[in-house]
Image (tube, rainbow, N blue to C red):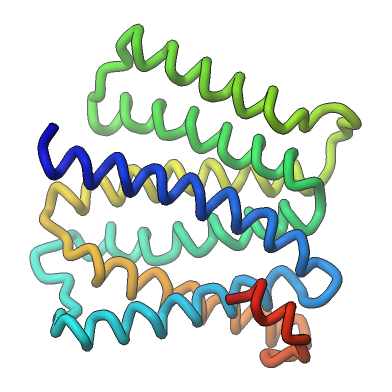
Length: 218
């Protein structure tokens, strides 16, 4: 197996672990801060880490040679996905938010990939999609006490936007986009957007948190 495939598989496993963990941790903060404050701190902390990393490894932030419209759309797509997912967590169970968001992400990624990138949906891929979605539902049992709620709607919107973000990221990757530059861009835009929404809702940008709350936030 090539180094690139090992890196890709490891990254996917990491994404699954951290995304799953973030949903649970966000639920713990529902009684302490608002969804927008949670997103604001999430992106702001990530932005600090990314900037420090780029300085240490002497990486220049650049978007040279990229489609500027795609870059701008990507800058807004992922933060919006995170905002809607956080809203889903705050307005429903973790299980329902996870299934609605990740299930929609799976389906939309397949559909967008087929339409815009002409990716073939082979029998093996179709089986993998069905099995993954089935495992997601079985392991979370989101419909045990099901009712149509704003949390479900927020989750579906989040998943659809994530599918768009995945598509754009794939295209930008083919244009040789710098990964750290894209991460810095989306975190900066996400922190700024969440900050504006927080202020628009007359909420504090620096909520009082206990030591355990700060640990969860970090």
